[in-house]
Amino acid sequence: MRVLSGIQPTGNLHLGNYLGAIRNWVRMQDEVAAKGGQSLYFLADLHSLSDHMTREARRDALTDMAAALVACGIDSTKSVLFNQARVPAHAELCWLLNGTARMGWLNRMTQWKDKAGKNRDGASVALFDYPVLQAADVLLYQTTHVPVGDDQKQHLELARDIAVKFNADTGREVFTLPEPTIPPAAARIMSLRDGQAKMSKSDPSDMSRINLTDDADTIAQKVRKAKTDPEPLPSEVAGLEGRAEAKNLVTIMAALDDRSADAVLAEYGGSQFGPFKAALAERLVVELSPIRERYLG
Ligand code: TYM
Image (cartoon, rainbow, N blue to C red; front, side, top):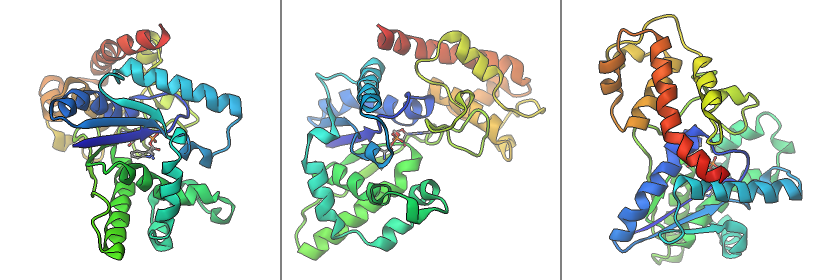
């Protein structure tokens, strides 16, 4: 068993990164070691070159992200934590895999379509080739499991397609096919301001996300102001249909408690959002304040 995953060192870690990926990385460390496997986690600094940043900002973002991962519980006695750019083989394998990946495959990537928008001719080649570098990250180490949020699923399917074609072209089982490990409960945490948009570092509104560095008052304020609707909470998950913002808050509560959304609604169904939001903010502070303290310390 070899587990590997990465994160772009840009901006703060937010609740989506934490519940969708990092918490799983931390949890998997012991399990993997017990099975005699290896865990590898890295800062995807080569990937972040697809956007311009000054040298100083890039260096600060790297050290901040490394500190945040350690604060979350990534333990260098159990996992290897490294910078992608320090291992030239990532870029080298990317170039080799560029001979296998097809333009049509990359053109179908939703992240490419979203980020390039209508200005494809003005987008960087690195943004287009981004998923091939990601495939190289994974295939380089014969990775078996890749813990990620749902938004990375398509990139991992592409990594598998590249591995299958490379193995077929060469007539040898050169690469292991990696499996994504996506948490069922928190695969996609949404923005607090818009239940249709994913919680993201690049959202210009800081009110849209909970950062792992937010203090208790900021968390309480963001949750209080989170967009909801006028109806009380339903008693069953089916009642969240068409209520994206309500569903997101229930999902967050369920993920924090490691219980189902139905169990959360069995407790809060029929209640207005006021008391539910107060309970959610309190639960978030319990989860995140030790991380924040370790990070700032
Ligand atoms: P990045 O830096 O955007 O995100 C890091 C991890 O956080 C997850 N995530 C979320 N999960 C649930 N809800 C959300 N709102 C949310 N936002 C982010 C992501 O799914 C991811 O697991 N391309 C990758 C980095 C990468 C990588 C790799 C990952 C580079 N090479 C190889 C795995 C394997 C990225 O930009 O993640």
